[in-house]
Amino acid sequence: MNQDRGHTSDPQTETVEVPRWLDEALRMWREAALFEFPGEAPEEVSEAFGERSRSAAGAALHLARLRAERARVGFVALSLNDYLRGLAKVTKVDLAPLLRGLGIADLSRLSAAAGPAWARLCETLGFSLREALAHLRIGFAEQTASAPVLMLAARHRGARGRRSPLEECEDILSRLPRDYIPEEAQDLRALEEAFLATYRERGESSAEGRP
Amino acid sequence: MSPKEPNPNPQELWQRMVNLEEDAYRDFADLFGRRFRSIFMSRGLPMADAEDLAATCVTDIALKVGRYDPRRGSFGAWVFTLARHALADWWRQHRTSLPFSDRPTPQPPSEEEPEESRSEVVAAVREAMTQIPERDQVLLRMRNLEAVQPYSAIAERLGIRPETARVRHLRALRRLKAILGKDPRVRTLLERHEHRSRRRAS
Image 1 (cartoon, rainbow over the protein chains, first blue to last red):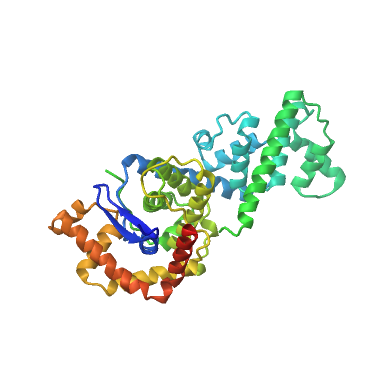
Image 2: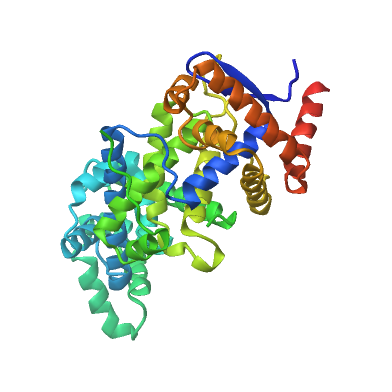
């Protein structure tokens, strides 16, 4: 049998053999028609799949709204949880189901296990790695710091002249003692590593020239 | 009953999505979700995986609409390119975990295939279609362009016997093959397949 043969297979057992190149040319034709000429409709889909698609698009819309608001607001020295809650309130996005869909069960706790999911969320919302790490560290620092980082940054601002809010925050964070209990320290380290790995991975895929 | 196929102008749809209009995102899902599913299944993904990947693509591609540049081609073609990339990533992750099956070997998208070559092949097929009898065109559209239909369904629609539909389809494919085989725009594709054939034989 000629190896260079493809199949146009039929659920009813008939099989017509066509050369693979022709099979591929016809597939290209079909795919181009489906995407470039919306009049060509593919097979019907189930109601359940239709709903799932719409729900996926709804998640995209909510994320896009959060991202647009984040771009407008810029960096504010809040913990990741507080910052996201604030964005959600302003945009009227129901955060809990959106986060559950992304694999984040509990907004109030940044668990190391959910680190990659948190990192993907931050990257999707347009946080730079520096900003994301600062938000992450603020959450941990505020558990032990004497005052909220936002307030410490404002207090510090008067003494050192004008810098960007992110630089001010990073400066404050570097001065605060990191006297976490071992479990917290371990969680923070794991989360930081997950953020670094996720941002590196995503950065690499965009460096490959993907649109 | 599946959701109704929307018929928005793709360029307008893109603009409405950039403006974060809720309806636009729903239209995007209805228009492209089923297309993603269809191409993923035609590339050999099991239905459950095709649906998972299609839903992921709806979210991921909808989130990237701001990066689309209308000067570089149609919105549909851009969406299709991203879906192909997602499929290639899926294959990379699942290459070794697919179960054995007696179905034809699934064909991963060929990453080395340049976009220009793809457009040329598509243009050649479209042109070749106009050179074959109308009756053959109808059969090829029903069997290869619309959802892949069994011959019995085609036969019922055309009022002929399933065997007749099968034979006519085969003849239509032969005619198309004869025309395309001489078309220089298909040469790269042909050579790639000949090369693969030789490699397998050796």
